[in-house]
Length: 306
Image 1 (cartoon, rainbow, N blue to C red):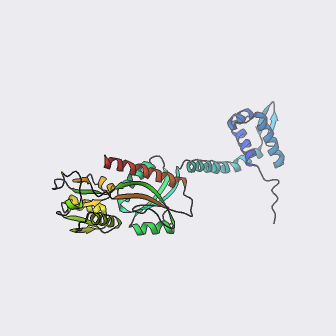
Image 2: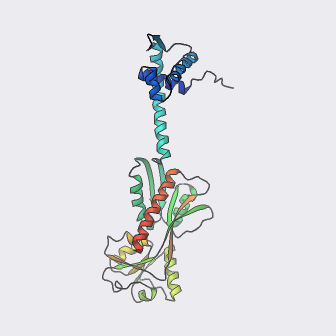
Image 3: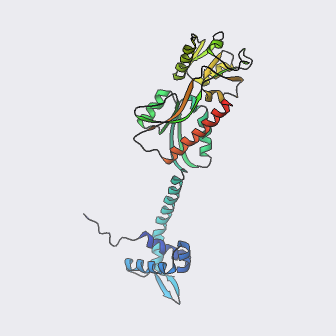
């Protein structure tokens, strides 16, 4: 059935009516709305014509609201209150000040740079809510693929057949050890220098990169202890169990421990990236958060290489 909308009420005319009721004069309403006084008068006449009854008694160049006008105002006030709420939400969305982020990260980023990026990002975004999880690399990839997370942050992936990989920064692996370790005074740590000391190995993609570096140097890699996460390796190094080759972000945020960080050679590049779905446009909020993470990671990289 076709609906006849010829007599549908105009929100613009109702807005003019509301302004006149609020300001009590057409001149005041015109200033409030930023339009001319004749436009206000014409709008009121048009609304009265559409409604079929008078809204104001015009006496001595004054407008006196009728009872019908007062009743109408009571009905439209909730509408304009809702519209003001919508306008505020639109402004927040336009400025990326409102919305929800669903984030997931691997531990090297989730336990280090991301909490600080999140703190900075939320400082002036009180209407933004966040779901943040930390998981293994394969779980991070799966979460983004399935849409349970909007953005995944990880190390080591440069491309993916079904996801967009946004490169955030590139750095190199470093070596951490307890302060006072025999290798502390070395300018650069190499596999040859590590060979005579206990090594804490990694059971991860980063661990494969470390093994490759040892292979390039022609030195067998023998781990005294193996762990899954770089943060765990830093804690064990702090306890004096051995040295560990880890990502620079984990090493940077382990500076509160009693550890020393040294450059590691052969240089082994590590890429920090954000994963997103190719088939779902990225929200402005998500895009700006990725930019914030990039800034945070770049700062850490610059400090680590200084």
